[in-house]
Image: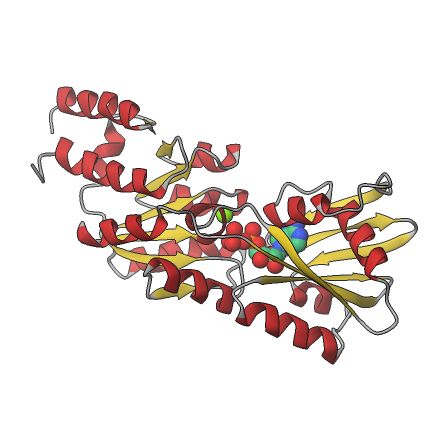
Length: 292
Ligand code: ADP
Ligand code: MG
């Protein structure tokens, strides 16, 4: 394509709600044949709500909620925001000391003198806080319903499970069908559990799911596809997607996502709508004269 055509394409993109980093970006999309979609916040709304709180024998629901909410109030993760929001509005949340976030795993800190961990059930196992059978059952039940189970523990003991979930964005299924129509193979990539991921994949018509992926491994998954000869577009919104967005042949960031992701992408979908990803691919092909 001529530089003029690329400039026109860039201008047209802005009208469609697509911010393009530079005209050369459109050039790189020509041969894209695979599109990797992050789940939470990309295919789904990322607006998590708490569905259930299950506690181990002898533990208090209020304590689990309060300590988890206090810890998560320092987190920017959608799961953290949901757990913080369900705190009892009656009292102020306890102060958190030594807060630390472990990307793709969960959060930790000291609350009311307790060393608290909230996150993936496997994260608690790292801390040798094994879930009792009643909590394992709660985790399995939640996951079979397509939800995410977050484990809560303190002082060396698993205390409860908070079940969270969000919903698929209204345009995601239509967008996936349109991406297929353009000849792209969609892949759902997520740090969330396999069952929840399969649920969402089924809802939007994606067959290939790569779940339980740690943030550092998202980029490895993109590299693996590239090594197999695929030309990969990646759509994501989170801090944990940034490296994969940068590695992809075409990185599309959700405008509703984190700054780090937006910086890492080649283009930004301003409204955070997957249908605009379809527009972006069409636009680049049209600009490059590969479709009319
Ligand atoms: P995704 O790829 O779907 O955006 P992430 O990599 O951000 O997911 O998170 C993967 C998993 O790590 C979550 O499903 C959750 O179990 C756990 N996790 C991450 N951050 C938190 C948090 N702040 N609180 C609790 N759990 C968390
Ligand atoms: Mg995400």
